[in-house]
Image 1: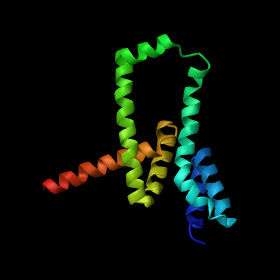
Image 2: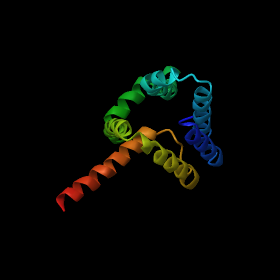
Image 3: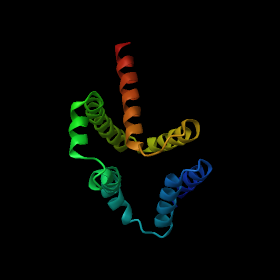
Image 4: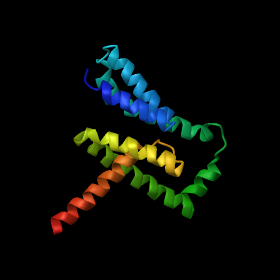
Length: 153
């Protein structure tokens, strides 16, 4: 059955790396694949990213909803140096995420490298694997630099 060995490999890698998110995602997809619920895959492919981003934004905005972040804090963070730099960082990050989505659409097999890189980041740098789009965007930037450099030679 296509995809099963790759999902099992991802599950094992997630377990070894102690990454619950990767392990759970691989398990869910493996169950869907083995249950012959293939009609769910197109929906996940179309709307899964949006659903994930929705929940990520909800969790990030909870301090605003709870009143922990006030209007005064918001104004300060828009007009201060850290606030301006965070606006620039946010704009650059969203651009890089867009480039990452395009790269994953053109070369979907790159996801394995992104996951392995995320696991290295977890183990070596105690990172948190919430940014496969950003990782893909950074990879796209690296590829762009290499391709442009090779064109000049």
